[in-house]
Every structure is written in C-alpha cells, then in structure tokens.
Image: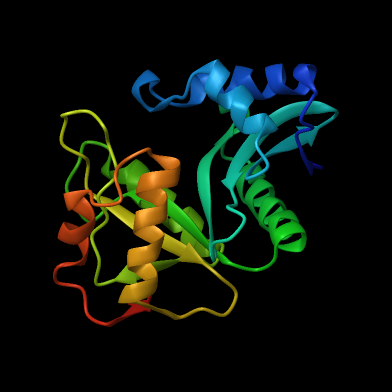
Length: 212
C-alpha cells in the first residue's frame, strides 16, 4: 500500500479535522488532550504533527515534540486508522516522520514512552507487541531505569519504560537523563522541576546507563 507522509500545515483546518477524527478514537479519554490543546500544538513552533496519506486520505499521524534548545525529541502520540492496522502502515509512518524530523531539526535522541511489558497486565500481549514494534525500528531501552509517567491526577502511574531512538547513541549519562526528565516534566506535562518523582527515578541509577 503506497503511503506518503507530510507535516500538517499550521493553518490547514481541513487536514486538522482529518487528523482529529483518528486521534479522538485512538486513545482513552483520560489520555487525550482537548481539541483546543491540539490546535495550539498545531500552531506551536516546537511541535509538528506528521500525517500519513493513502489515496489522498489521512490514515495516521505522529505528534513530535521538538524543543528549540534541548538535545532530545519526544514522540508524544502516534496512531493509525483502526480499520487499517496490521498492514505495516505504522512503521512506514514512523520511519518517514523521523527522517523528516531529523532533516528539519537535526539528529537528536528521540524519546518514546511505553507501558512496560515486563510487569504483568491484562494488556500484556499488546504491550509486548508495542515494544517490539519500536525495537524493530531501532529504539533501545534505557537500562537500568524505571520511568514514572508525570500524571497530574492522584491515580497511580502504570509501570513505564523510556525508549531511545538514535542512529549512534548506545549509552546515556545520569546527568543527561536527569535533564531530559526535568524538561519532560516541566515543558510537556506542566509539573514542577522539583517534582519528587524525578529524584525517585534517579535514586538508584548509575552514572552511565546502557541502551539495550
């Protein structure tokens, strides 16, 4: 199936509606941002929404966070039209989005948050498939490290992993990881720089961590 990927224009409301139709049915309501928040992301200089097209119809998207003065990117959301899943569109979408992202903003570590398949869950198979999907594309796991998602509600965060995609990086320092976590918590999730979960994540981390 032929697929091409391009960035969503800042003022293209028709394309935004096509993207939003997939977004609004792809994630639990508790994980979704409001339509207004997504419109703000469309116009922000530090976000790009990449759209996958097949036969001129939007069939998937990636939302990439690319801060101006930091050394990392974040894959914030990604989904393919549920009627077309399992056909390899997701890998083509992500690979093309990464290529365009690196070409436009330079090569940096791309961070990917996933539910950990190492902890027992009623979604075990889905979590394992999701991790395998990213690993097949070259993403590596930070080891040893347990990631805590920056939930702002009182509910307990699910066990998470933080994957890293970079063509050459095979290790990351504790200092760099600390900076990444602070930036994610403050700039993406609106938490405090002094959030106790950051120190909790780093408490037992060695000075240098492997990407495996």
